[in-house]
Image 1 (cartoon, helix red, strand yellow):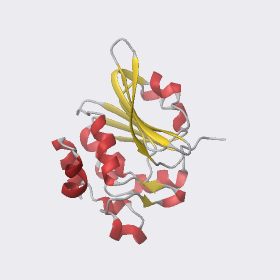
Image 2 (cartoon, rainbow, N blue to C red):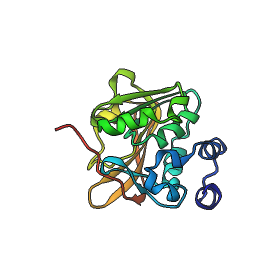
Image 3 (cartoon, rainbow, N blue to C red):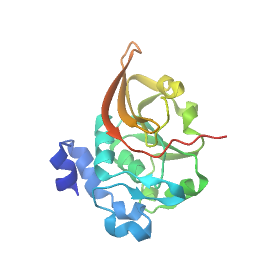
Length: 200
């Protein structure tokens, strides 16, 4: 997976590659899809959600340029695979999930339980997590129709956010905020994520 799907497509961050090698993806995939855990595709997950293909996980993570001192906000815990990758690379990871079943599945994962720098929040990601803001990096793993302004506000100066945006057609964006709080948006590639849920 790492050589043919990740390195072959240009991912070069050594710490990220080590994290991808260390984290067993099959332990985050529903049992009926375990044989495809390391294939180059997104997979069905629980509660009608999906697990992103390994390359997309790697690409989004590399774009954040994480350091061991960084505080990261993840919107969309899912089963926790991306969360574990982030925990390997950053100082503190605050991960938000709106679906209670997924929240419990991720927390119970034995790989996740090995980390003491992951903080779980069961709540609406559209509101971010003000209690721990600002964040050096924000990663969103479901697609909202627009970029929630509050997430931009919770990004610290010098920070980066990676987020898929769109409904029928989606684009992955990299947002940067400079020390003067100027925000620049870079459209990257077309993607297909599940819609970002919110509380009714």
